[in-house]
Length: 159
Image (cartoon, rainbow, N blue to C red; front, side, top):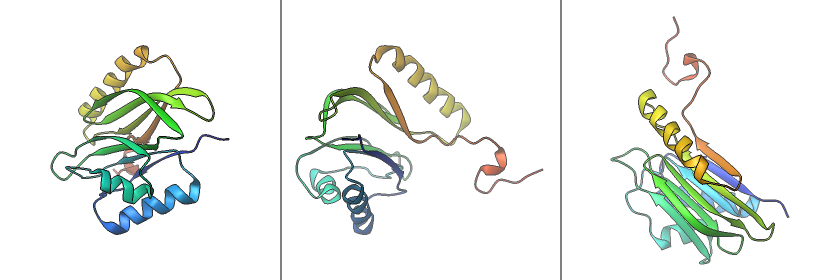
């Protein structure tokens, strides 16, 4: 069996249509683990997560949004992934655990990079400090807000 993970910059998770889209994505792709970034949520309940997964055997870790920006959720099917420990910061969640059926230990990090370059550098420094403490393979996924050329940014002006 292959490991099935996904990440999505959802730009707000509270609406019922968004929850239905998440549920469809999970079921259609038989996902074991999904990271949602830019959730813009203050509080996620078991009921919110259950609506997205369509089942109760789910676990999650979240980081609340600041005002109307940011927010992260890492969520998984407990039959497929078993959490051992977690680390959280305002712009990332890192879950250490094991994909049970594959007998594969790893760390899955869901990242939402800040738009501000200095804050983004701080986020990368936090992840660099974390990495030596994590011994299994590390999977980084999310929206890093990194671009190769300034013109790739929305509303960018070229000179």
